[in-house]
Length: 221
Length: 76
Image (tube, rainbow over all chains, first blue to last red; front, side):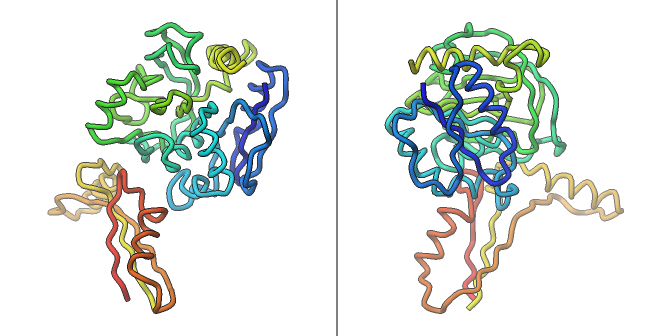
């Protein structure tokens, strides 16, 4: 499998995501700088990593979403290539219009950096097929703007279509309906605030996140 | 020519920063403020020929996130 990790100025989880991709696929991903205008041929999986792209100028993810490489990512997503956006990556994907809603300042105003409880809401997606529906997992979060906002109609629609992938089991950031991660209508784009790539081996304290990458490998291969 | 663009949160979108500012004002003894909403002011210095349509497109495509924000263009 050939994967790519997008790198923006200010990304800081790109290496963590690359390590997770390599650990599961056995092959190091291509690291793609934001100024690239096209993806290498045959990319099967794209990661949009966490961090503070462009210093969070204007809005978190706003500048990155308009960078040249994101046009290529949007085209690939349109062709069905799986795209995984974590933390700032989730913010970038909503700003790019690949996912609905927006991520606003945490309701408590504080930067939240800790492990949180989550429920896997939908185990049918390519990202969650190695989990059971309703399964409890724990992933770390580290964000200031993780407060998921969308109008009631959009929330009803994504819930009705089974597009909520993860929900918080505790108060974290004020997200609407405790939503921590969602997929697009096509099911090939996932955005989530928690960091599965930081919990892929027991040396990390737990390995709850590893199955997300293993499931992706299985779905893509 | 200068144009000012005001970006504000839509009604109904919770503004935790506005709330914190409100609390801080009350803490300083300023009573009588009912609500505080925080927004952004963006100033553009541009050619006179720049069209209203382009200014509007700038807001929709980048300056405001219309999922959560409204914008108002005040042409200089």
